Length: 247
Image (cartoon, rainbow, N blue to C red; front, top):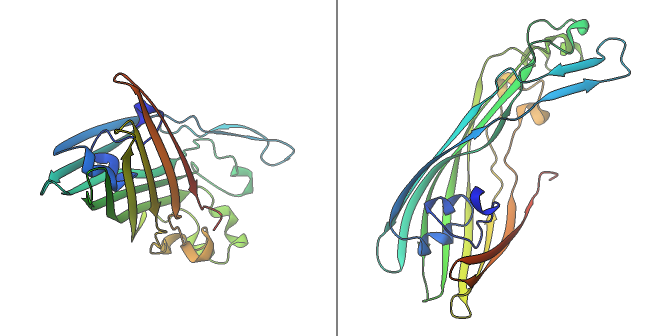
């Protein structure tokens, strides 16, 4: 999907369609897919107007991250497909070797580290020659750590669980449902998907940093997509998706 500008709700190329629209399993055949992304974000902060912290600080304590993925699709019958996907859903790491807030009583390097991994078993049913539906469970494991901000403990409702508590983990489960259909002699493919919110266990070690006593849920999302096979070698595709972070 990254090689197709991210389009995946109606543009099915591999078994990792489970991560966007599980109905796509009906159209990719029996297969196993393994991949990895090398991620190199550039992180920094510029603080101005502060007598205590003004300056430019690099957050690139670690430069490269490898995000693996694997998925499998098994064609149970001509109409039913079952598969699973294991993939990194998101995350970010910052590492400030020069602590921007050292003048506030913070010592050592500062930063946060968040990792989210999904395991998603899925099943798809082709209920007609041209349309299918699919559903997947989203079993999530996530891990979080923050360090270098203990000097702000007096500003927290739980200063003992604010910083430098090591890695904490939590789990949660949700679901994703999708639909797909082929039209106009299969030249046009349409798709739609919905992913539920995942209410995760709290990060108890960071109940003084994160809202709602350490809450860190995954928001619900939904989207639609379309793909048009212009010629045998040219396809035009587009997705639109909304992620309800504010809720």
